[in-house]
Amino acid sequence: MLPTKRSLKPSLCALLSWFCSGLPLPAAASDQPGAATAARSEVIRVSERRSNLLLFNSGDEIITGTIDGGSQLFAWGSSGTTLSTDQGRMGLHTGRLLVDNGKQPLTIGARLCSIRINPGVTAVIEQHPQQPVRIMVVGGPSKPSLRVKPLGKVGRYIWLLPGEELILSDRTLPEAVDSDRLERHAAPLAEDIPGLDSRKQSFSREDFARQELARVNAAIKVSGTAAYKRLEEHLLEDIDRVSSDLLPETSSSPAVAAKAPAKARGPLHMLASGGSELSQQADGAIRLRTGSFFLDANHNAKLETNLGEILIDDGALLSVQVGSGSTRVSALSGPGDVSLLVDKHKITLGPGQEALITDHSPTAEDTTPKDGIGRRDAHPKRSDSGIFVTLADFSMVSMIDSADHLRLVRRPRSARERQLLQHLLKTAAAVETLTRAKGPYRALPKSAPSRPSEPVSPAA
Image (cartoon, rainbow, N blue to C red; front, side, top):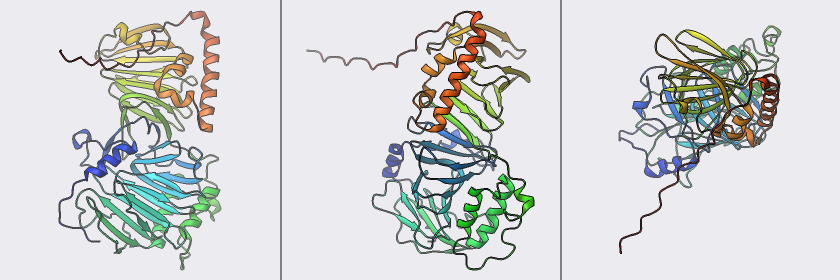
């Protein structure tokens, strides 16, 4: 369908459905630094229902296996892609995701729609700040295999076949929205979607397979693995004519297969408290803006905060709390896993150590907040630029027990969360044994959430 000339606004019904779904609302343009440039970023506001996040920040991470006991899948996110995966419900907040689905249906929430992918289907879902949502069916049996439900449109479904794509926008679509050099042709769309501009197109699956598998192979080099072979099979299903050079240097090449790592890299796993905010640029740079975060690092990475950078090694576990004028970083794994760069000075933390960075002389409320976490041996130091760094020991057991952003670890549902809890408890026991001579920790009870004031009785 050709774009219309009318000016479109999101319908109230669509916005209400988006709010009720629990997915973060897109940030306003003023909250999106660089939104007009290639390195766009979107502020993600974490809700309680969407607090279990996966961040693809290096462009070579993949997911294989299951998500919270859901469908067996292979998923590759481009650099800058952010997913949430709470209780088997997956939401794409920003970026581009190639999904090869397993034997169970998979539903993914996006900004303007929800997408149900049938078993054995391969799809690409893409959305970026201030850009349309794009859904492509790139592999699977020759029948309707992916269903799109625009948010707030009760009873409206759009089915896609392999070789078809749908573009949705809450503003008028421009004439050209494609930059991947695939030849496309307009395809009929049964009816207009009120409040959204939409376009359905067909494309060459053979051309897409040639282009996409070369990108995947160059980025993640997992040729020869079972997950990659299944991806190849789904992308090439029902393609009648496959050129001999369609898949140069794929799993059939011993030289390429030899490059496959023993274990594929996964995305960064993050648990965040409700109301936390972060952003991720297209180049993968992650900025923690405000709130509380727990990170389970599957590879080396760098985090940006308002007062410095955090360098994390493969396997690191850490907690980060970012507030106005302060950043608190707590190491929950082995020696040297977590380092800070503050005023070009590097500070390395050991397990059970934390660094409080403030733009002011730290107060007693800063060093011993009412969070139920025990601390001791606080030593503040001032840098030449006026930044204060206070190093202290903290009780890992009390953090596990009290921190809001660790609630999924306290009550684990998935195998990975159970592993994390066991690892944290073992590390806490080892730290307690080695540092017992330092004396007890001091903690203040966790502040109760504020209660609304009692209603005032009307005058007689």
